[in-house]
Length: 469
Image (cartoon, rainbow, N blue to C red; front, side, top):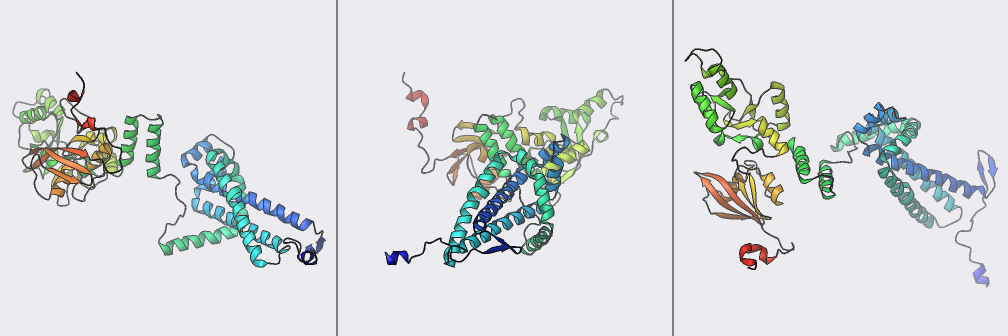
């Protein structure tokens, strides 16, 4: 009993609790109570700053503008805060770190009044505050902010603005220091990034289709729109071999006949060779001026009806090209390479098809025609990205080619003949049609990889033979 009574309780006070604040002695009981109250208030502030970060940076700029236009209270304050996102993020981080460090320091001081073992005090304070901050200062408030982004951002905007004024000296210092560190390390001048990336938008589109919000055609159009500003003229142009053009020296009647035979309303006009395209003629002008222009027979020259056009590099972004064609009111431009040689032409229809899909005319065949779920007949000029998306495969694009025909030539390293088969990374390609040296069609088949669900063996057999009579 004597030995037992000699052992002091683990958390009993180890020294007299004689605390003074500004020279005024406080009762011993108020010290732990006051400390707990302060820690609780700091935990509330930690939750405030953590939820502010999620709410502020998740709210889209266009929604903020709409709230300001609608006259919603606190919307202007919210807009002012988001106008300088770097300063806003520094404000939140400075405030959050101050209150978290203060919580740890106060908790350590309180425990030191009861525990002599300093190492134990540090361990208990560190892990205890960490648990509290993770649960009530990070996880719970951030979850709430995600679910109530707009309303919470409006509610906290004014308190956050007040915190910015209170912490102004620290914010200015750390704002400057972070920008200098980013400049030295090669990072961005603004350390905040958008919470929504292009890939996340693609994922949301696919999720929308799975949930029935979008149909397949809407999903494909949205995905093509996202790809549009990363596409260059070379990827959408009609290649030189497929270009129907006419010489400047041809007659109006010959130009009209070629328009009718080719099925095109416009023809590029060249002087000497196709590498020197000087403009475009429209069948409307040919017919109008030939039949109703009042010119005497033989007086009307094709050269008189030529409209100017643009020559653009094959690397030109189609987003910029579309804007330029719209501003210049052009429906056809000529694509040239680095040596000034004509590579092909781009029409307004080509650019439109990049967003809405192929626009087929008359007897024109589908660029990708499915044979079954894993196989499709693909035209040689179809872009590799379209083939990958259609068959869920991963054929790489090269610097010198973007089409399936270019991939086949690059992989074979020579001219190929009809019937030849090549394989690449679980994809089998059989050349179906060749004209001269040009690959017109190929059968692309995705092979099932190990681990994928097995296909019913009867699916590979001709259906009429497997069905009972």
